[in-house]
Image (cartoon, rainbow over the protein chains, first blue to last red):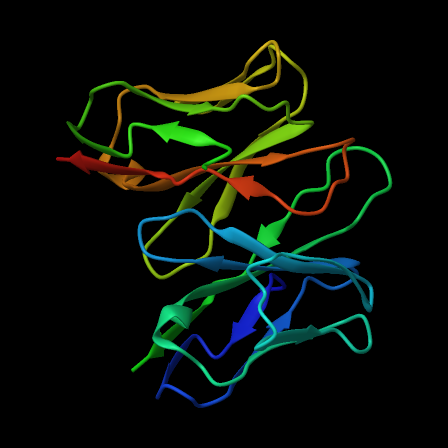
Length: 116
Length: 113
């Protein structure tokens, strides 16, 4: 299976700890996105990368959150000093990133974060 | 304020019934996608609609994009238990390749055998 993969699938942590999630996009996809989904809601955009450049960040991405895509392939999302309100499903998606036409995003299985 | 409003939020029906899910906005979208999501998994793309008035069919599912590209609908004919899941609409703004998707809050569908 060459779809988007995320690791870990589940993470339980105590308030105040740091956590890091990894996303491996579909090979040759230039764009990589992070979304957050809380129970009963649709995903909310956090940030996205075109290759290694972070092009947009949501206001939801507080200074405790940082995302990187150092070589334009996999990406990491780190949350520092976690709070209970950070508990959510963190979804990664990737797309080819065409200059024209519709650019379909394909989602990974997500990382479920629980902050105790 | 939800930019994309989905209705209904919950739907529980018997196998064999028909249903329609609506996705409405006051904003124009360059394209709109429909996804289906299972518990504990990521959304899986069902269809993308781009042109105002466009209708796409995927077996028993029919998707329509409004003429003004502000709304969309998903109609399921003769629903089956396997259709159970969370249905999400998501819009892209600007011209074609716009980056982020804006999602509705989702419609949870339960089809009872």
